[in-house]
Length: 189
Image 1 (cartoon, helix red, strand yellow):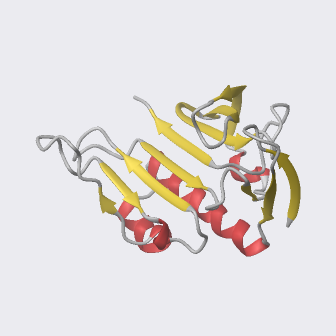
Image 2 (cartoon, rainbow, N blue to C red):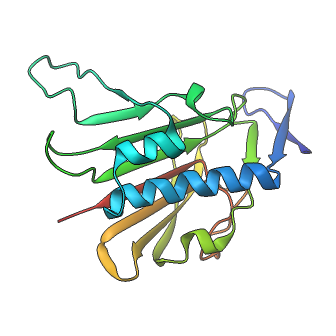
């Protein structure tokens, strides 16, 4: 685990920045979660099958609007996962349509001072072609400077992937970052 000093912009206090390295079991676990997500969005597996294998039991999100359908967003709370700080959700247009969007977020409780360095193998994302990278500045969020990577599936441009990473653990010059805090998969018609 690496620790760096970071100056607090409000005063001269120094806040330690903690980067936790994933071990091989954690890397394999996150790699399997990503693979299960993509199988659902690609349509090669069902959400129900992946719940039994990888995600545990999910819950439907109850919308604020009582007339809206309940079965459009299924989320998986942190207690379903072996690593703290993981949340996962699937979205669809209607109760009978396939799941077209999924989001996984992995961050330690100490974010923004703590980060996971996952060292995810680039082969996990090798079915995707990089379209563009950008730096996103978000002054009102915990991580204020985010490297964003946009991809499409090599053999199907209707399937897109967006990876958001800490600027400290990735470079916009990379094709595939080895760490992230959010990944979005989306399928359009």
